[in-house]
Every structure is written in structure tokens, then in C-alpha cells.
Image (cartoon, rainbow, N blue to C red; front, side):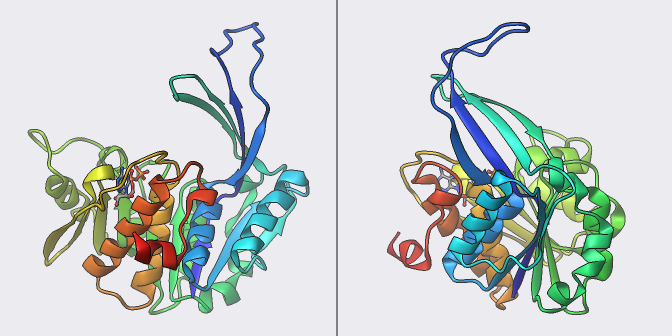
Length: 297
Ligand code: ADP
């Protein structure tokens, strides 16, 4: 019922005392390899909650690609739409220093080879979905093709991350456009006057044409807005351990509940519980809760 179209990356993580300068070598911790990428994360998050979920993505014909396919299958994601080959699996090279700050180099690899043609070939997957969720770690023209191919009555949800200005036809399809304040600033291409509130951001975004908008506010929860008005969704109070993947878990849960017919404020309140559960554990995919864990929160 939910189709996620997006990226799949292997996150290669090394702890360092300090980052090397140009021409320098430093020793780090043992390497940790985790399945990641916003598309893969969203699909796992939704499937873990019990959503019938498929992923349209591209990985390389290599060990990292197999790692990603394994993690999708273990979560119960339909991987028939995961294409293999064309370039190495996307990689995020991550160094983490003792203060917890990270530096990341992303090699898009196979994600950059997920083409509009691949979307056309996945027509059956699109037609089987009530809701399609996308992000921007794949070529923009591929997202444009998703919007053009969207069957009548299928909902489109976009988290424009990493953010960039969006064509009108993509904006007009979003229901909702899901952004944090940093992404809002780049999508709007400027700042509303004064010190803008989440409501100001939502108004500025709605003026660009999406049917609805959700602004995520970290520990402050979220704001849901459409032409009729806006509503705050309070965050669930938890001890935050690691916010990695919280946005992906929130978006996946929201897309799934909207596709199942929940009202936007209700779907966002559920998504906020899922996001809160995800920050109570370290890591991205391994931190995503089951429906039982969300209910127990
Ligand atoms: P992003 O990672 O995209 O910036 P956010 O950090 O806003 O996204 O997180 C997405 C959602 O996860 C938030 O709207 C909120 O509901 C939930 N969340 C994130 N951080 C916390 C936190 N520290 N406590 C409770 N909920 C959180």
C-alpha cells in the first residue's frame, strides 16, 4: 500500500580522535557498516510498523547492495522494485569525533542511476500503491517522473532532503510536503519577515502550491497545515539518545497513516510517537519501533 521511491546507502562509520587534514593519516576505531539512505530507512520504518511496503531504489551488484536488500527483507519490505547494478551501491563515509559531531562524504553511486525510465518500468508498483513517498537523494527528474506517473487517487508525500528548489509540478503534487525549518528555508528561497514562526514557514510553503505542509520541529513536535488552517502536534517527551533517522521514521509513519485514511492531524500525532520512539535508541534503521513499541510509549 505504501511505495517508497528513494535512496539506499551503506553508512560506513569510523570513530576518530580528530579528523585528518590534507595529506594526513589518522587511525580510527573499527569500521561499522549500517544500512541507510532515506528511501531505505523510510521503507524499513513503515514495514516495522506493519505497513505493507515496497521500495523502488537502485543498489550496486556488491556486498553493500546485498546488505541493503537483506535489511529490507528482514523488515518485511517488498524488494521486487529494488534494481541491482549500473554503479556501486551508494555510500556515506562518516567520521564521528569524541564530541559526537560527524563529517560525511556521500557517494550517490547507484542512487544516481535510478532513472525516469526505471519509474516507467515500475508502473505496476505505482498502481498498487495508495501512497508514494519520495525524498531527494535520487535524481530530481526521477521524482518528477513519479509525479507524472502517479495514478489517479494515489497520494504523494515528499521530504525534500537534501533540500533544493523544486519545480511547480512537484510542489503541486505534494500532500503533504514534509520539511524541517532548514529545508523550509531553502525550498522557500528566503526567510519570511521578522523571526518566522513554524506557522509563518507553513504559510510561505503553502503559497508555493502544495496541497498540505508538515513542518517538523524536533523535540517541539510538528505543525500540520493546509488551506483550511494549521494545527500543532505536540512531541512525545522522551530521553533523546540519537536523533538519526527520526525524520525518516516520522515521514514513513505519516505517509502510511495518511494512505490508510487517517486525518492529517491524527496521522501526524502517530508519526510524532514513532519519531520519538526512534530517538530513544542509537542508530537509524535499528532504532525504528514496532507498532507495539509505539503503543507502549
Ligand atoms: P529531521 O531529522 O528531518 O530534522 P526532526 O528532528 O524534526 O526531523 O524529527 C522528526 C520528528 O521526530 C519530530 O517532528 C518529532 O515528532 C520527533 N522527534 C524528533 N526529535 C525528538 C525528540 N528529541 N523528542 C521527541 N520527539 C522527537
